[in-house]
Image (cartoon, rainbow, N blue to C red; front, side, top):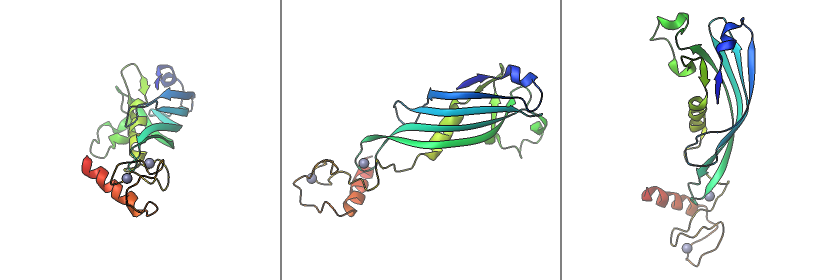
Length: 174
Ligand SMILES: [Zn+2]
Ligand SMILES: [Zn+2]
């Protein structure tokens, strides 16, 4: 997700570009993670405003059954962007600036969205992802995946507390 905006920066306020996105992204785990949607860049008189509306899909591991699964979410962002050599009038007031909300272009005026999208994706991912609502998790005795098979252990399979117990066991293992 890299866009050269040198030309747009020479254009008058209000000029804009739109980019279709369908690209691999780097999620929290190794997977065929992807973002699809669009990125819009608008020239303002100070710099640029970047808007993105992306559907992201990343691979996560279920906190109960430990299986990998696809997690989809929709990401919308709007941030300001400035050429690295010309941070605009806010340059002097370092303390009040919020660098997190600003994307800087590199020296060639290339906007690199990869890190920004990655940050947004990581913030949006649940702390304890579940592959589905009510995932039964692993048997605390034998480790069988209770979504797939009933093991012979003497545990109450329908009791949702076992899911919570499996979580505790999982945490203990880490
Ligand atoms: Zn699961
Ligand atoms: Zn079991």
